[in-house]
Amino acid sequence: MNDQQIARLLIQWIAPMLVISTALFIFGLFIAAHTQAAYHFSNFSATTPLHIYATTGKKPAGMTPSEIKKIYNLPEAGGKGTIVIVGAYNDKAIAQDLADFDAAFALPACTKQNGCFTQHLMSAKGSDNSGWDLETALDVEWAHAIAPSAKILLVEAKTASGANLLAALDYAAAQKGTSAISMSWGGAEFPEETSLDSHFVSASGAPFFASSGDNGAGASWPASSPKVIAVGGTSLQLTPTGMLIKETAWQGSGGGVSAYEKEPPFQASYTIPKAKGMRAIPDVSYDADPKSGFPIIHNGVWRTAGGTSAGAPQWAAIAALGQGASDVAFYKDKATPNTTSFFRDILTGVNGSCGFYCTARAHYDYVTGLGTPQTATF
Image (tube, rainbow, N blue to C red; front, side, top):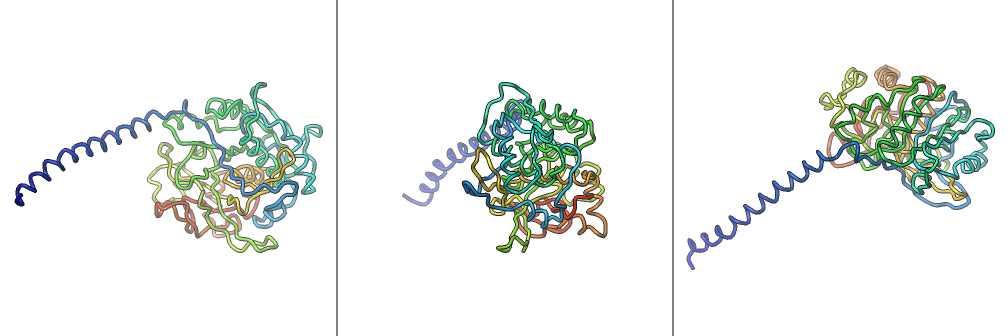
């Protein structure tokens, strides 16, 4: 067989393969586009960005309330109004868990009996859910730890569906005397999200906080709403005595540019690089690394937990301490000459391999936002 005959055979074999490969590629693009287009709010089901680092049994292990307050320059006591935690299902053990947590860290008692703690079920038929129960324990216990004089209202949606969570949010937003509303959950964005921004307006003027997610680079809802303060994650390196050595970006911190929400005025005036007129997240950040995580107790068992879900309720508690937290205030404070009085700028760390959008840097970045708190007064 000569060279020309070999060439003809190769062409006869390769050409059909190229046609098939091209067809499969185009079909794959069609399926991906169709799947993306088919994802709507009706499909939304929230997940909790929570990670359990260790189960420690009868003793707490991890950051103590006093240690985290020193790191973030927060007062030991204080808090006004009501911190609203919006979750899902029905954590039947939370009242006892909170009592056990308070006793372990010598915190003021926050109970249903003394009027500090209220649990509101959106459905009397709400059932237990082990994952959401742990999230609830983290949110309620640590919101109280940071702002021990504030009241806690836990609002639990029937399920984690978008419709049920919106109903719970509407109930939370209608409450008077609210200092902040925390949402330690999220999911993929969807086209209708811009029409839902009105749900994040509180009758009390309270700010909404949402976790940015634990899957690294990428935007999520409700953190992507310009009416919500998106909370990313950091990692703390500590001495054996709990003193801070260094704070870096946590690799799981969610962040990026929204596919649907336009850039809000408070970000446009700050001039966020490469936002291209769209909403950038996160706005701020907080310790999220499970290795420098927070002790929680559920049903008598202590665990050490992390994730960006830890930041939303604790930032909500900071709002209850200072009564001045808002996205507008945050970006204004960051732009002042004394910015270090308000935020610790996170300069190192990544949450993926997407280059600029995955790398922490000075001023604002898509991993840690403006940085972590250095005060409760914004």
